Length: 165
Image 1: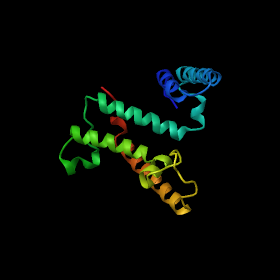
Image 2: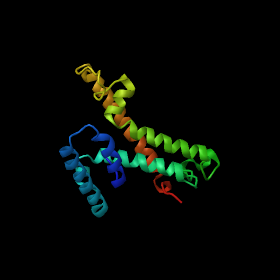
Image 3: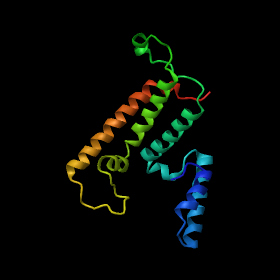
Image 4: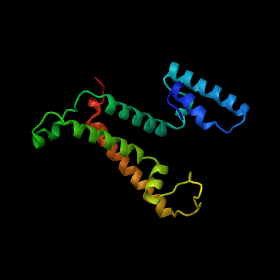
């Protein structure tokens, strides 16, 4: 799922590589319609059904861009100023916060967590369907919830710091 017109064209070249011409034409027009909707509405209709996925994808891309282009340091959260005797985080600490936020966002995805925990997920060719028990899925779900809560805590602490100067 692409984030813009440039992403749609890049996705088109790789995703529809071995498909028929009719299928390619149909889907490239859909991608242009979605890009138009994003340009005029600020979102496309796919996002109404996958908001959690879109939020994770976009936030990861935004945080990576902030990390790459950022020229400022994060302010120390008020409740930690006395502990660290500093008003700002260092560059390494700021990058660590951003990396941690990216990690938590990735670990909120069920397929990603399954791949990390068990080495295989449903998208692998040699995946054995039915190999996970209910307890495995409960464990995956708990990890996803813990990472969501950890991300939201960091997001809340540094919400006003997430801008690019």
